[in-house]
Image (cartoon, rainbow, N blue to C red; front, side, top):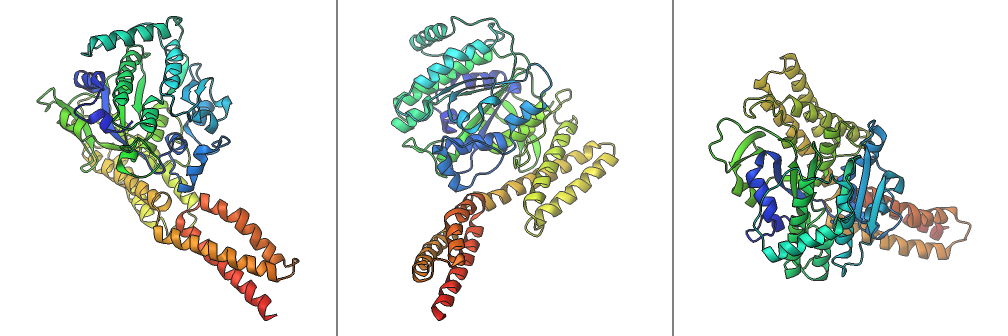
Length: 491
């Protein structure tokens, strides 16, 4: 779901925009930034672990035995939920079942995700099941203007899908519906094929019907796990592939507008430059919405559920979801947001200190962390003075921004010079190794050990380490191989 599928002037999300206009205190709209590679498997891992991928993970997208072992949001819900309504349901793209053990989901309805020429089976399969798990009652309604013939056809089809719906009690904590129609239209045709408008219009209609039936105290997030190029593909790092859309709807009010709001066309956003909540024109925000990282979903949902944030998450919470609505936004307390930022920051720093055994590499982050915590203690000593809140929030947001930039530098930004040099060294090392191996006694244990390294250990290093480590490992192997070759030649 590319961002411009939602924000362009000729977009087909008519209900979404109508809802955002009339219920702006319950809605949020963002650009949703993915880290490459923009393949489904890596995006789902990021959306549930909060971690950044390495590029060699791309091959895992085609591996059916690709179970996730890292700490993640799904396992945290299972481990820490103590109430009866703690079930997890998932339906749609079968990548979820290839990543997570089946015991993670109380009910699942997987559909084949690799038949990209099938535009309808997955989405229709979801629709046949989806409304069986939502209350059989309409709790809110918003009129919309849409072509009457298409609306009639859609209504009849939806009625057929849900005719056997039961009035059941909602017993789930997390519900995942992963549609594939938009993605498959892109793969089979292009991003701007007429069928794309038809699929998006269908998603807009389903969004309305789901919102009408949402249980009380629910939060709905509709987003794309990636975008697509103009020709409909994804997997790379272009802006079109990495920038998706994120629409959030809450059945309850998220915030109060400040008293200085002068127009119903103004909406509230958190400005990451000033670290303040500000009023902006709604149309302006739709045209150029704020950006949140996909990994930010993980700490956000974890804290909203009151769960520990997964250990290796580098995401930061979405500030707009942590406003105290009992007071006017510009004058009220941000204590709930600050408490969330404090937990978020401690979790990230614990992970970084354990992962990077050398503090020198993370020294700038460590210094900013210490100064921020010191200021937080000063804030607490002042009995949570409102005058200190803006500065403290700014320090936390600067820390979290520095962390994600550092993480991308280590894991997702690739130095082509280093990578090319490493590949050349690997090739050269293999040639030297083979010539050495053929010219010496088979009992030479060093050659056997180096052969094992090249065939087993080095590929593992490629998948787990950043590119600079690849270069260093290759240089070590090359040095040992050349030394071994010279030793045998001189002897």
